[in-house]
Image (cartoon, rainbow, N blue to C red; front, side, top):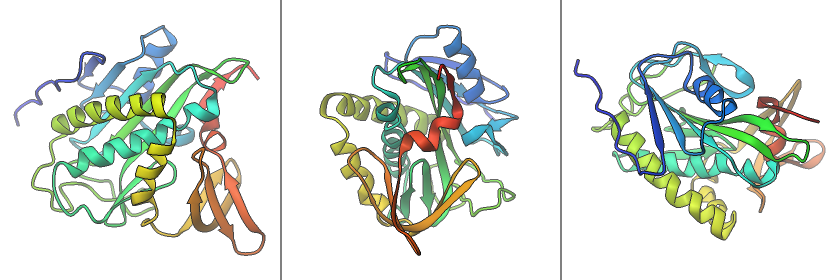
Amino acid sequence: MAADPVPQTPSLYDLVTVDRTDSARAHAERLAADGADEGTLVWAKAQYEGLGRNRQHWISGYQNLHLALVLRPEQAFDVACQLSLVATVCIAQAIAEQGEPMEELRYRWPNDLLLNRGKVAGVTLSGSLNAEEIPNWMVLSVNVNVFDHPDSLGFLASSMRGEGFESHDRVRLTEQFCRQFLAWGNRWANDGFAPIRKAWLTRGRGAPLSQTVRLGGREISGTFLDMDERGALVLELETRGRETVGLESFFRPDFTGER
């Protein structure tokens, strides 16, 4: 099989291509902790110890997409976490450019992308916080089941190739995501979260309405009502009314720093 060409990304990205590593995320975290500039982008052709939320390990599959981007946001942690939703919108648009059926491409708050009800992509945030709850650095990780998907994760999964995409090119997907994230990231920085929320809700409202969120040892289950103006999930619970779950609560276990 021919080797992948190197993705052609906008000049604001510093692409770091690795043939094989433990995970793109861990690789980028090490670079960030050593002072890597914002825009450093790790593109791992293969990873043997994929990391999800709360550093849980998962099977990465074959010829899939594994990206991790170093960021140094100046916003407070709760606002910076909105970048997970920015990235979800961007990877969805990148996938949509490669083929049909797109009516079944949906978001599940705050970091999953579903294709025909199976998880096709996920976004995670990790990093380090200072005493003022501002990130010293942040790594935004994106994983997409482009070519195949593992069948032992305990939930329904899907892949672009498995769902009939004529094009399932991880190099092209990388290039498209990078362009989208540059544009939407600038929009978020200049115009705030409102445009991101509007774009997310176009696909987020069509996801399965029943949702379970795990926060540490606690599970919150309910019916999706809304995503509010700061990106928090609003659930209707069966027995005790509504509950709001903030992005910062969801991603905090993957951040270290002063408390």
